Length: 411
Image (cartoon, rainbow, N blue to C red; front, side):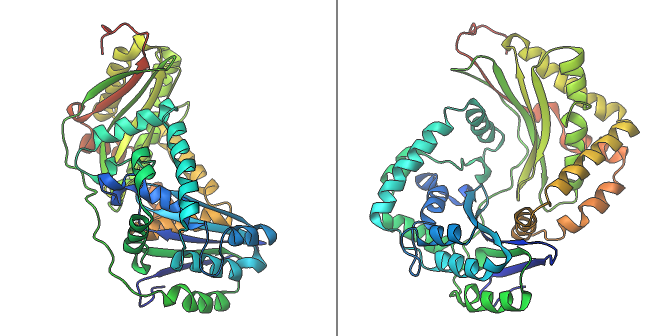
C-alpha cells in the first residue's frame, strides 16, 4: 500500500501467532554517505532511540520493556531498520512510538556526546576483528567506483567531530516518507493498524527523495592484495562481480555459490579441505546488492598454502565452467537453499525483515517467486552462470597474513 506522501506499508497477518513485529525500513546507509559523513548512518541509528517529542529520554525503551517487547535497530550498506517485536496486544502502541521517533527525534547534545564515545569504541572493537578488516579491504578492492565500497562502521574521526546540526541535516535529507517502508507482521487487527498508520506515518510531510548513489560497478581487472596483521593464521577473501539484485540471475547466483562452497558437500570443501588439506575452513556465498553483487569465497589456512589455494579455487570454478555439475550437486544445493529460506521465515520479525527488504530493494515479488524459480533451475543454468560472470582476470584476492610470515612468501 502506497500513501500520497510516498510511504510504503506492507502487512502480513497471521491470526495463529501470539506476537507481532513492527519494522520501519529507511532507505539510507553507508552508500549514501560522502567521505566526510563516513559512519553517519550508523551513528544516527544509535541516536534515534535517545528520545523524541512525545517519548523523551528513554521513555520509549522503558515502555517497550514494560509491555514485554523487544526493541532494536541495525544499519547496513543500503538501509537502516528499526523494529519492535511485541505480544499481539501491543502493536498499536509500538506504531505510535516508532512514528514519533521517525518524525520527531530530539538529538539532545548530552546524548549525542555520550553516544559518540559508545560508537567510537564500537569502531575500535570492529577493527580488532580480522574478519571485519578483511571484509572492508575486500569491498574497497572489488568495488572501485560504486558506493558499495563504503564501510558501514565508518570512521572515528567523523563521529568525533560531527555536529548536531550536521546530524539533523542528514536525518532531514534521508528520513523522508518516500524513503520508508513500514512492515507489520504477525497477529494484529488489520483495520485498526491501517487506520493508525494513516494517522501517523501517513501524515508525515512529503519531501524530496534524495537521488540514489552509484551502485553499479563496471567489470575491471582483479587485484591480489596481501596485508600483514596481528593474526595467527591466514585469512583470504576471493571474489568476482555478479548480477544486480533486481536481475533474473540472482536466483541462480545463490545456487551457483552454494554448489561451489555451500557446506561440506560442496566442491571447495571436498577438494581443498577433505582431499588436499589446504585449508582449515572454506565456503562461498553470493552477496546480493541493489547494485552489482559479488560471489565471494572465504578461506582460513596456513599461510604457506596461499598460492595453492588460489590455484585450486581457480581450477574448481574452471572445472564447473568446462564440465558442468552433477544432478546430485544440483539437488543438494537446492535443498540447502530451500531449508535456509524456510528457516529465515520462522518468526514475525523474520517475515517482516524479508518482506521489507525486498520492497525496499524494488523487487517485492522475490520472496513469493524464490521457491518456484529455484525449482526450475538446471545444472546448465549453474554452468552458464559461471561462464557469464567468471573470468580469472577479474578475480580479486585479499589476504591477511601473520606479521611473522617471511615477507618473501609467494603470493
